[in-house]
Image 1 (spheres, helix red, strand yellow):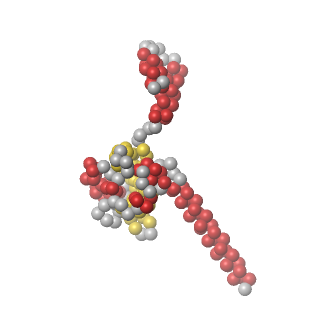
Image 2 (cartoon, helix red, strand yellow):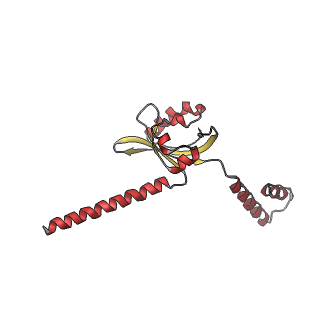
Image 3 (tube, helix red, strand yellow):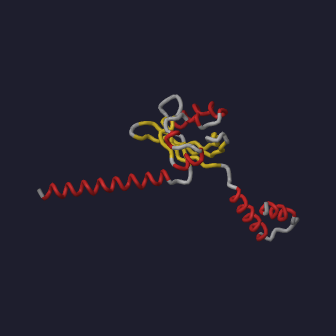
Length: 173
């Protein structure tokens, strides 16, 4: 009887740890700053089976609107011919880095840098895609110009001051 209690207690601790681990990894997935999608690669075209909140924000869709959709749903039409080749290369075990354009819900084009690889989950071949938006927010551009200007001014470079005036004008826009 005492052994049964200990075994039952061990099982409860293991189950609690498993739940905590699942919650921790779900948060890493959901709260990541970049778009993360998991796609089923078993059919003629990869189908979205899961995505994180960043994916939804970037594209303007709810998760439930993206789940079950083929990747063509997001890709601009000119990207469609590349999908089959990329999928084949991923299934062959490669890691791909490429740029692609998606269409947001509002119809605007979203340029992305994608890193994708094959993963096997529950014996099924899947594609994990991490997408980074290539559009830089205006505030980040201004900060970058100011940093570039400060670095250039601090370098002791001699020559024309024209680039300094041009960079300064950019930061005041």
